[in-house]
Length: 566
Image 1 (tube, rainbow, N blue to C red):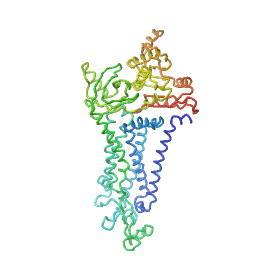
Image 2 (cartoon, rainbow, N blue to C red):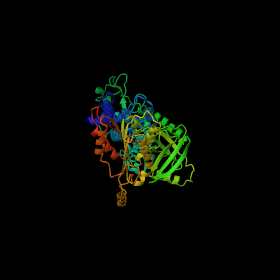
Image 3 (cartoon, rainbow, N blue to C red):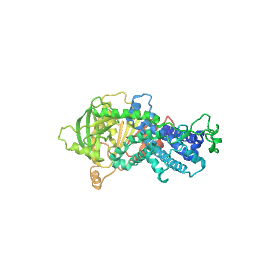
Image 4 (cartoon, rainbow, N blue to C red):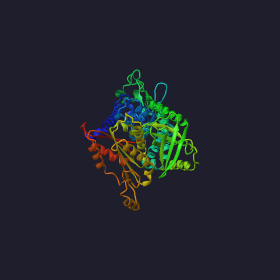
């Protein structure tokens, strides 16, 4: 339990606070509508469905206020990088922005379903009351006309259609009904296209449907303008419902029972979402300004395993290790932006990304670059960023474990390059004293573009007598028999057959219990930052190991798990 608190304590606390606010809003508004005197007559028509419609609406307002904030990348980067008060613990929460975004989205989906079902029942009961299906009081309340001296309670006024068709007619001809349909359809498309299988295989579908959020928020702002949920207003003299509910014939004839008057609630959703909407608009304006800035290609290189390296230069561009940028190539699509971790170091006068062929957009970009004449500039490229990630904190730890899978090695390329520059310049601010680097790849060619950097680091460490500073292990997870035979023949050579490095390549996957035990043994009193850029399944394994091998005793080893999310 104590080990879990080290890695997830503050996250759990924040989730409890968020959940508590949701529960409070739901319960408060449920009883407000279920017990409030001003809704006595409304409840007589609608029953408990009134409270079941309004309580989820309050939770929806709160979560729709939150849903845009985790995707305001510039705002998060500002909080993360500019404020000294933003501690390591707080930065870890910012790195989980997309997880929180998804959690809020699921809550919105659930509350929308409850809200929609309750209101469909409300429309049916409004219609039944208008048709005189229920008691005399329901009929009298439904017959109140919107004249000079009274206001209506039942929003269904039409009686000329077939009673079975009236609810459908009402839904498709009122502001609340139409916007409700638009909101619900938009939400269904957004959530279904966000499924992992669609997002990974058909990113363009995910990208375009996600921008239905504009329609969603537009519908949300106008949804309450119909004011179909109505409450009793105070009259002079006051209408005493406890006395008058059984004396319908005396309404307007005796002072104790004036004709009851009703009004719709003031729309409140816009007040909840206007702030985040303004922030997000500012975010998009800033992205557009960055898109207009000129980006020049310094070098375009095709690496093995169909990996494209782009080295670019942009005026005023400053980065930190492990950060990422969004790229847009108008020659492929005017609207699509894709995230890529930078592989260059802050000390270099350019920034670079390595792009693996993994979909329509990347395939088209690689094809365009391969067809360019040697030395030619590539197509116009829009660059938004840089944005902070978990890897940005790597130098805040005494000891760091870096785990990359496949192209997930890219943030660590930036880190290792920066280390090389820091050693070269004898940077006294380098706090980190030990780095463990693990790279898992399925094929041998993937190692080639990165091996040169590791060879330089090997030589640098030897010359400075710091061989123990960097421990790296490369794991080949896929091979055939011919490769095995080749390795056996050259096993006794000083350098590895695959990479040319002194450290031999391992075959298979790491035994993580053994690795964590070794790190803990070699660093008995250290705070170890564990950083992953790779698949979710590996992340779950490493997070459990961090909890397992962390000690609650502050004098002993503690592992903090950090994962790239974008």
